[in-house]
Length: 217
Image 1: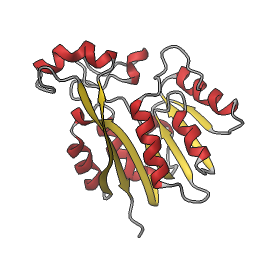
Image 2: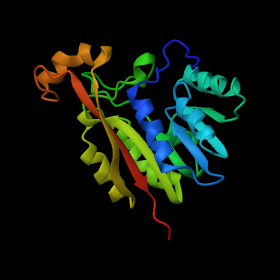
Image 3: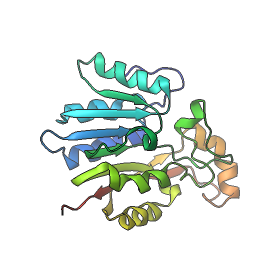
């Protein structure tokens, strides 16, 4: 059970799928882990349990950062919890493993600057954060490092693969799961149909975990 402040993203199918991929990938001995868009810190907790030496958890929501820190603290775990945009605050830090469960739900209005919708609303194509994440991932990884990112199949996984490969990384889909629409997707269904992102009558989406490896010199 995790503490969750109001407005902080609740761990769901995507979180569990990414934790499973994390367990399969393994963490290098003494590995440094980055958890982008940490939310409740569920992935940060999992990373420590799987052997991470240090974990840095980042989120634009102050409530999320405080929640992630608290969930680790009450378990006797130590993390570095940072508030802010991942591109702006990480500087030259490099990591052995980068975990990301970014906002990826396509929505008719642009990604918001504040409020609880920041945890899921990723603009009309669902890639407002994903495109930025793909661009910065090669610079966040140590040589030999691995990145694991989860997002909806509605957000064009092939685009994610192409962008990561263009950044010099090896990339592939390593996990996939079909899940029923949650409340937000059900609310957005008429708009998603009108834009051709889903078919009439569709009530499930695919989630994918994409692994990217940075080659050693």
